[in-house]
Length: 408
Image (cartoon, rainbow, N blue to C red; front, side, top):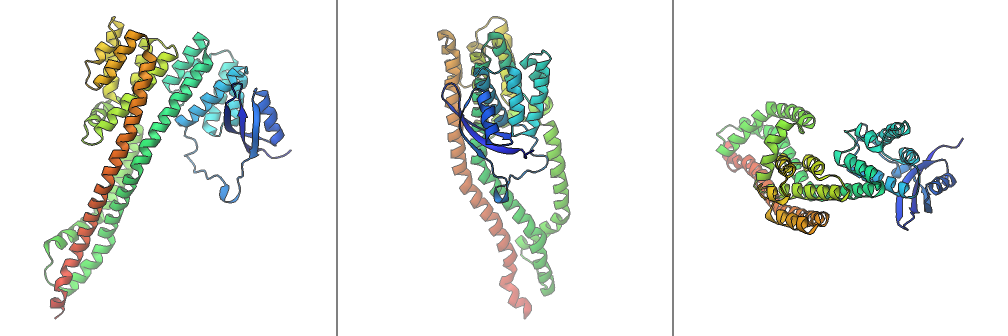
């Protein structure tokens, strides 16, 4: 029996759209047969080379993480197969076989088993809250109830892809300043631990008094010898604690308001939260999720406690018969443009369209803000790092001006 290999494929669905992905099979013929069974027309099938420099590198512990990108791809592929007429069980079986993420493949296999015994797709997804967000579960439930599961899955894929794109823009813009800062901190710690003691021994051998900046640097070097291990251990402990408790209500209640009030990054955090809120809200309204249920979910997925708390108040006002825009105007976290456009959407019956336009506007705002911050932070960081490192070097060489007098 031939070994199972990984193949990359490109196919056309019934609408003529080209869809790409990967699948495991024994040979290209088996791949083509499986794709045709899914109602897809193969365009190209090629084996993925996994030898030499092209071998995929997998780090233990990192390959099991299921991200939004994995869910977006799975949602779009599921929508394509459902629209092609495949049964839900067959669709889940194929997804579980061809999904690259092994953890997601395992979960999809469990979902398929639950569906086989008669449970709904949304009910099966709900059993895995750590994998499938509430937004996806409720949109799938709305699609099942209304008979438009394919549309709901496509909306989920579009929403997740937009979120992944937004996160990528922020990470790419802030990656360089963060790396420079970390390298500068490590360089200064290394100088204090290894370079300054050498100069300190040389100064002691020569005798004489040291200038005040040099004395401070020597004192800081002595402190750093015991402080550096303590800081390293404290950092590891904090990161482990933060990864476990960062989503706790008590922590978010204290940290999230500070994010919105931060001097430079507060405006960026607010735009990100508003963009995520309007995008998720518009997606759920378009999928037919009831308004009160949609408000309950989008508050949780906004990513900021302040907005979540405001949405809770809005939900209660709407439940008592108020319009949506009126209670939104009472919370400063929502810009006036957002509340005004939502009010227009309510009056005109085009709420989904308005929310989509708001989301697109704030996505562009986030991109422009991150680019502006990057262009501002980079020179400031270079000057700051250069000043700190240069000041340390000057402090070390100041005694050299009187070294000849000490030698004589």
